[in-house]
Image (cartoon, rainbow, N blue to C red; front, side, top):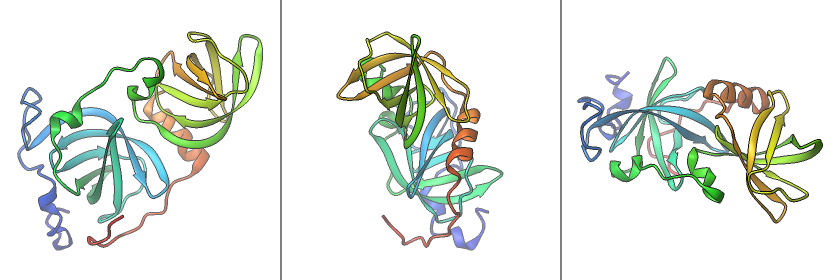
Length: 224
């Protein structure tokens, strides 16, 4: 697809022609091979994707949602590291996405520790609004989920949870997930899962529960 004349004005954004070994410095301006879960935003739709390769000009990612060339998307690789870009090509569930501007790789790939209320930094979070059941000891509570990731969830909660208190979250259509409370105040609580949810299982549940966005082809000059 890269030889398609429709992509001539976009191909230069993504430098995937000369892969570099994993041990190369992250400041190398070409390509670095990684396996990291990121968040893909298409309009109001959000889903998790697997980032396979990253360069200063863009990423190559395995996606579970239909994309179209020239479509505008946002890629998030970590907390406060989200970038707008354009889909350059799509093939067999893999998409090449060029950033609007080159990024500095060392900061892009930096990992931060997750502790306390900063549990979100353990992985990307999907914003949502859906019902769930939270079991605390022998009591069950109806809660609203307002963000969800592989490693944890944020919910509304009518009472108080002690830090370190064990809980079990049950989403409709998904198996119960064991976790621990990491913070609770002002009617909300953050819960870290004992074991991360598998990417495929979480993606399948998201699509079954919320559907998938309509594939659109957008012009190269479109910007949000």
